[in-house]
Length: 284
Length: 249
Image (cartoon, rainbow over all chains, first blue to last red; front, top):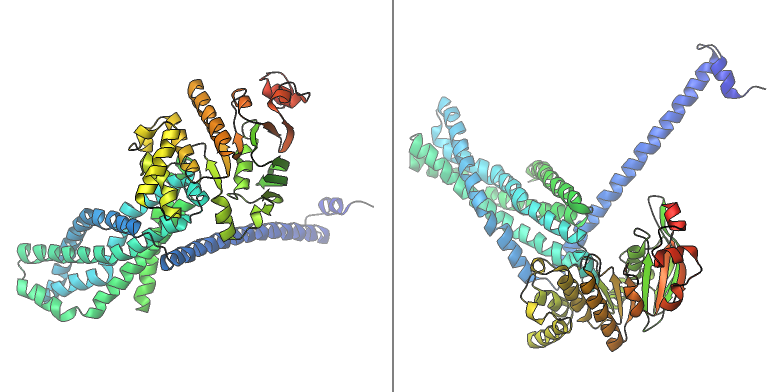
């Protein structure tokens, strides 16, 4: 008796035996693809679970004593105070661009007086928290990922662990608290500078009435808008700390490993900020 | 006492440690030698559970370190000192602050008591005048000495040295090995020293264990290992270019 594959391949292409063989081959390839993609899905889920546990543990470290307050203050200074120049600069130009774009559009419908509310509401509700978070991710988040990554590859994190200390308490918890505290403050500074930038362009350059600019703003911006901005900033702060510390903590060895971790931290945090902004805007 | 029993560890299908068994008695100082990449540092990391084994176990004073709850592990680790190959000093802290770090974080000592103890340790490693220097301002030998001081300041009972003399000149190597010897004798430490410094280490250890192809193939005294009949040990210890290791690589 001939082997089955011989029968299949020696048969005519349109014969029933050939069709059965082709189906079997297709079935095998499909199983292989399923196994491959299944393994990838399981791997991604495992990584997501690890990342979630990292966040849960870092929150646990923030809520349970002892908290390293000296490190928290140092990180607030690093994340908050040292980010001020870039926040002021980007805030000023964002406000000016908003005024420049908003003024001709509002003039077309005869509502130039609403330039103030337009600039203020756009900034306080959306642009302030989002742009400040993106700027801080680039400046402080990347730096923290690189710092933790270098500590990982130079065995410094292992050294902390071998002293009987929890590295999460030393490296992650202070950053998490510092980001959550610093982000709303930076976002507020961004908003104020941007509103002033809009004022400079709208009132001083385009000739809008200063009273109308600030007066209408006062009528349209309510406390709820400001609170929305604060909640968003705090969420973005926690998100940046989580992603950047996680990437640094799990960076692979060598300079390339740290470089990849830093890039991934900035890209992932930036994308997550925009996604999370959409979700928060839908919810609150 | 450290007792490693049938330890196995593989990465991505490649078995690095196949069946490692080694016993280090209390007060004994053992050198662990072997080819680069043979898994010596990996073995050392299992002893402090920086890595968990795939099989086998590591017993420290009769307790399986892989199965210890977190609190017990932390207590056990506080009895073990580990000197990393890189030193693993914190870049942002001075030599003094690096040595003081475990005391400030793990003890209730006052600042004056910490200062006294840290300066004693720095003095013992000959670096009392380098207390204000940052790791970037220290030479390779000085880094290793500060790392040793940071390890010893916690008064450990067991010390693990992971290639502490790699990349140093022969004079510094000898001075650091003499320092290890004097510390071991003075404090009656149990220790494992991973090193390639043959024959310099022969004078300071009681036994030498050789790790080859994932197994401990010999545990002998420095005197007997020089004339070991095992062809791999003979080639490695005597630095011969011809032999089973050369033909395999």
